[in-house]
Length: 322
Ligand code: GDP
Ligand code: CA
Image 1 (cartoon, protein in one colour):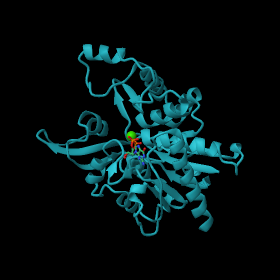
Image 2 (cartoon, rainbow, N blue to C red):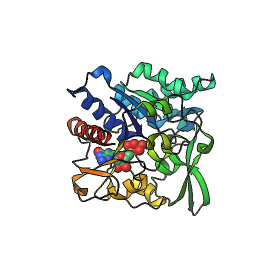
Image 3 (cartoon, helix red, strand yellow):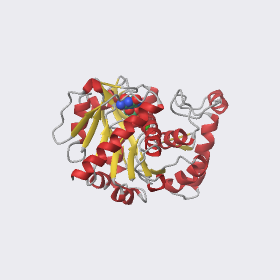
Image 4 (cartoon, protein in one colour):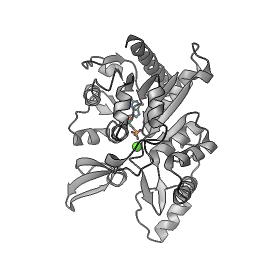
């Protein structure tokens, strides 16, 4: 099976780990016939202290490569923060984004390669040579696309970087809108459209529907390519609330209710064929979309693999019908 997954950070990375386990244990397929291509969100990317940081690509790479801080869900395991302390001693800004020492090495490699003219897709491949994530990890685009947030508070109306809104302000300043700066002229990274075209189906893991999956779908050409495929998504919303994080603040900004049904309707039945919801949302009905309910908390590896298996099974079933 050839599978494409559009992924953000933690939720996407954990789902991918479950998907690898699920494929590993499938009896009906020789493992060598399976491939997973991940199209990663780069809308969260930011330049800090001269270093290019790609939080979602790195979360996927570290999680699948065994280098992640498991409790936190992002950043390196056994991390130290000497560089950060030294930067603070110099009074360097911003101080709200914590880069660990081990993590900094990744960003130095990336920034040096960018300065030498390599595209992000080639750099990501080079970084993955070390981590061996067991998937093909592609950035959604090699062009610089950044999510900015239009906010208004005592300091006036202005656009700030998504990370400043999310990390510094914990999404507590009301957002008026999101702007995917650079998206309109961006192109999908090499290999992205071909991987989607060749895929048996496309999966949406529980990633942020607005600033992760929404950003990826906002790169010209990607949404149309995905819509031509069988697509199954996993709801990031359970019982009317995000499982972790502040996806509700993002949904509110674009006028979408925080519910499993509303997120599926936001994607639309032209895009989505199947939708997995938690048992708490078993009564969910979405016109034109096949809905299945099962426990959706990725609480341990077995549960996570079961969620991934259900997504694959539904995609295979819907693919046979069409
Ligand atoms: P992203 O991957 O960068 O988009 O961000 P996160 O990984 O932090 O979270 C993305 C979304 O996944 C959030 O809306 C969470 O509510 C959701 N999520 C996180 N963990 C789980 C889980 O165990 N099960 C489900 N169904 N959703 C989850
Ligand atoms: Ca993210």
